[in-house]
Image (tube, rainbow, N blue to C red; front, side, top):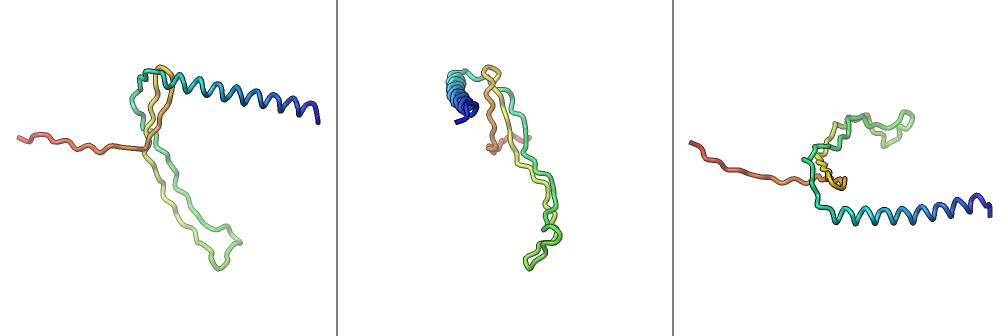
Length: 103
């Protein structure tokens, strides 16, 4: 076996073990943190409009003409802990209905 390849494999193995160890430490720190969350920031997933069509020269029996696909936006919110730096993202929302008196 090539000594350079053997050394690279040994280094890769060492780095993989260090990565697992570092992920475990970060997980422990995040679980023991008393989180101080920032205000949620609206960060939508946006897919810009595009035109979908079969490439020229591929016009067989099932050829598709050019079709406009509209822009789509998936609502998403992100918050970050000021203490440990953990970031959470959600697409879930809660519908709230409030009732107030009318005079």
